[in-house]
Amino acid sequence: MEQRPVILSGIQPSGRLTIGHYTGALRNWVSLQQSHECYFMIADLHAITVRQDPAELRQRTLETAALFLACGIDPQQSVLFVQSHVPEHTQLSWVLACLTGMGECSRMTQFKEKSAQHRHNVNVGLFAYPILMAADILLYQADLVPVGADQKQHLELTRNLAERFNHYYGTTFRVPEPYIPPLGAKIMSLQEPRKKMSKSDPNENAVLFLTDSPEAIRRKIRRAVTDSGREVRYDEQNRPGLSNLMVLYHIATGKSIADIEQEFAGAGYAELKAALTEALIEFLRPIREEFERLQRDSGYLLSLLAHGAERARARAQQTLRLVYDRMGFLPQAPYVEGVRIAMEDSSHADL
Ligand code: TYM
Image 1 (cartoon, rainbow, N blue to C red):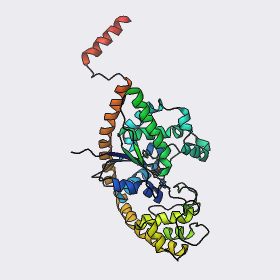
Image 2 (image 1 turned 180 degrees about the horizontal axis):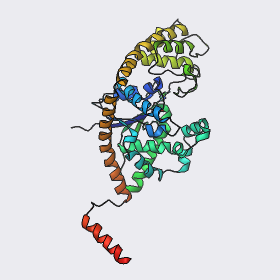
Image 3 (image 1 turned 120 degrees about the vertical axis):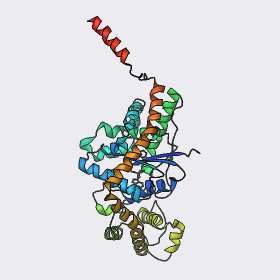
Image 4 (image 1 turned 180 degrees about the vertical axis):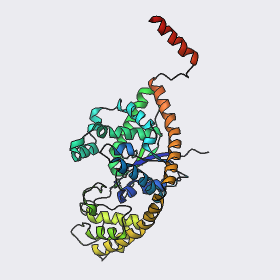
């Protein structure tokens, strides 16, 4: 069978997923899954870099799996799994940590932001977070990693680590390329449009969740902050609020930005908001309904994840074995009964 290029990507189960997760990641996963061999992961090990309630983490992990499916991930085509089910991730992470400079990790924008946000808990895991992410990607020999713009720097580190390893120990890893969509790579907060939309925003009105009810969508779009001006014209720099709403309209309807400008020529922001509200309600309805249906079937989700972990692990183990061998780790010889006895005998003789 013809080998398809490989994709790996992941999402943390640390909260409800937003429309940003959809546009930056899930939407592209769905469109790439037919032409690629895909591994889609729920990054629970990454989630514990900030404190998690155990019962909630378990529930969010299942919810995230349900949302992957509700958004169109096809488990017949793609491997869907939980990061902590495949121990090779943490094993490779240690190897890569020994190749990473402290300065490389401390330069990461996300580390700087998160350590400012969680001042009381700046742990080593938060610092080493991008190394684990590099391990996630390199373990699968991924060619392409579809992510939002905020992950670009982590992808650069991943590429550097792959090249460094290959340089020291011989070609072992594929050097992956990021796939960052031209539109929707950074969905902005509905309340502060110069800030990324984030699931942990304390202001609920700033964030559009994939499972929001029609009432919540109406309220959030009505209250969304726009810029001064009247004309519906895309300008990310000077009108980030309006441009963000136009991107959401593009996502919900499939219309191009030029078509949207034409549709609202002579009309104002209020008309765009009204049309966007209806488009989002219709766009998110099937996702929410399918999510609710799947969520009731945790047995199905658990068995799907168990099967996914097995498939993922088969690939991960191959890479890790190769890495260990290249680094000079002594292979574990098959256990032979007679050899053990002989060693025990000789140690007794020494006593
Ligand atoms: P996470 O869980 O923060 O986000 C998951 C994906 O969603 C994208 N995203 C957005 N895109 C556009 N606009 C937004 N407002 C927005 N918010 C989130 C993110 O860019 C990301 O693609 N470290 C990763 C998870 C991870 C991973 C990996 C990703 C772990 N291992 C390996 C790729 C490959 C993270 O925290 O993403």
